[in-house]
Amino acid sequence: MSEAEEGGGHRRRRAAAARAAVCAAVCAASARPSPCAPAPAPAPYAATRPPTPRSPRPSPTHPPAGAHLDVVARRDFVVLRPLRLVLENVPADAPPALLPAPDFPRDPAAGTHPVSLSRVVWIEAGDFRLADSPDFYGLAPGKVVGLRHAGYVRATGHTVDPGTGAVTEVRGLYDAARSADFAGRDAAGREAKVRGNLSFASGGAPTVEVRLYDHLFSTDAPGSTGDWEAELSPASETVLAGARANPHLCAPGVAPRGAHVQAERVGYFVVDADTDETPVPGEDGAPPRVRRLVLNLTVGLKEAAAAKA
Image (cartoon, rainbow, N blue to C red; front, side):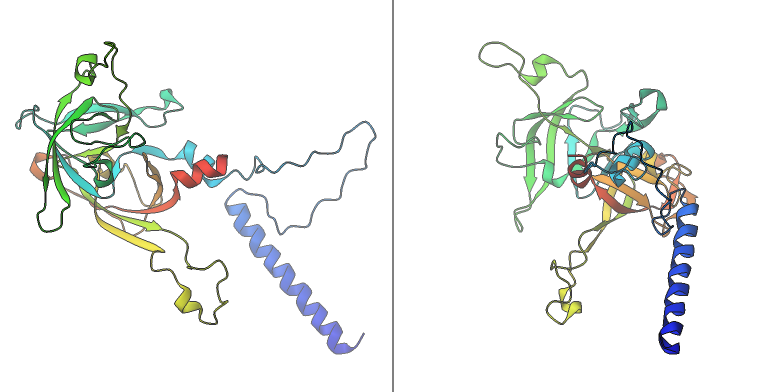
């Protein structure tokens, strides 16, 4: 071996050792075993010990991100693209009702948080359609659906922007008891089955910024065209500055920077460092809130469900 080859070998070994040391330090900080560390020597094979079966499922020490977040991320409501819903039989001067919702539905003993319900609430714009269909679980004219952790609502009217054709407001009646008479009955007199439970935010819900992330590149083979910048996907980041959140989520100390949250029916989020946790008075006599809350999507619920499959 020449002196140059020998020197190159030393440099490669030092670089590999340095990478392993950095990787080990990062993994130690996160309490995870280092994939860069040398593998331990295998134990002598014993005839009485069957070989370890191979499994395509993730290791228990490295579960899918969604499985980990499911047990550490508290639930709450965030409405990404708000549509105004007026509950016409709720008095305009009635104070918001505070309804209990579980922080972790799989562990009822872990506690609850309040969900605010008022005469005006915000629902997802995609949860209302002018034309209903059997596979649609949202609101439509004359249809009854549930409000999650609350009662039933029946859509009785709506307002359309004449310029754009977009629905700007939905009106409905509210039934806190979820009664059979409100839900309606079929031809045989049986209670109609109500499908769908919509997440919502009260009319005075604070505005929050939500950042949604998707694939960085628009191609499965970045660089294949010779111009990787042209392959960047414009949809890799979508910023929704007008999202609404349940007031509890915006209360000081509830969602500090770096905390994990599951927005029900949407996905898992982490509170961004751009969040300003300075307490400020709430609007219209509402409790204090943080000055600015910014949420970054980490795992969508569809992604988490696919990982479990």
